[in-house]
Length: 243
Image 1 (cartoon, rainbow, N blue to C red):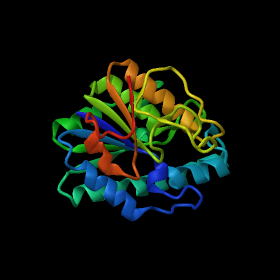
Image 2: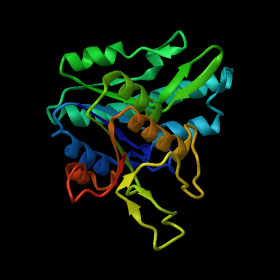
Image 3: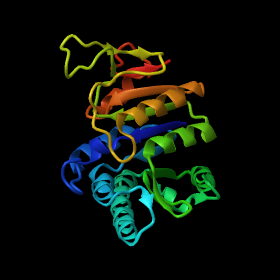
């Protein structure tokens, strides 16, 4: 089994509320459907972050945040269903699962994911809002990746982002920056990166490290070139393997 994460920046224009990259998303899904057995996780992009940032989510429960959370919940469900539909129309039966319904007693129960897999349906999870003791919180897709990796012990965890992989220095500042095909350290400097409501690139990187530390083969590839997923484990691989 593989667990694949599609970053929100690949699916949406983060500068424009609810702008969905239909063609790009379709191309990514087309390159995933040949995987024999996988769980899919995706980020929220402008479907999740725009309203969350505007109204101060996560945060203590208030009337304004409740209204904002209901909008985010609707928007994220809408984005998720676009992805689910793409899988279903390609004869890969899928169902969307939100962490909003999985939180219980300070933890998340992923039994429904296990049941979905058992019945040969692809679970499609995504970052979303949820209630936690007087608090409206957000569970990111990257955090979901770590939890799923711990529970299901997949063969590989594959993170698809809008970067080629990890560089030895910031490629936006240094033209001679080199892409690292393997990465074994515990931290990396990304330079100046704007974080989002779910922790930005720093959290994504920590999630990859955590998956690797479980003994799972973990990869970061550029989802703008989703065909690169087929080069994993070959000499032609372009991306970063966490070792």
